[in-house]
Length: 123
Image 1 (cartoon, rainbow, N blue to C red):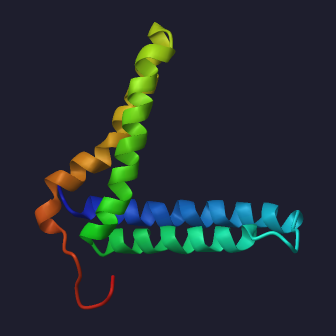
Image 2 (image 1 turned 180 degrees about the vertical axis):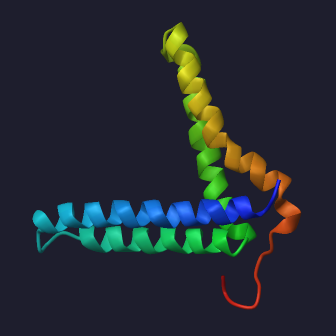
């Protein structure tokens, strides 16, 4: 395994963030309420996700943790929910999706020595 997988995850996070932010911004502005703080919340979320993506591109440990721990939790919940709530043939698909979301955590553990906390710049 190569640490460049984290760079690919970083580019994917930034790309998907830009797509979702663009479509969400159009929806927010079309129904904009001047008393609402929703555009500010969306901007803060966009910036936070962009920073994590940039950290993944820079092979930073903090970004790998911010990326993999929530996905591990989501994948584990999906896996366990699929076992008892979904009928047999279809629970295999849900369990497979859960394992797929747990993959970045296993990758983080395996490639931990190749990551760094910080470098020449902040990211």
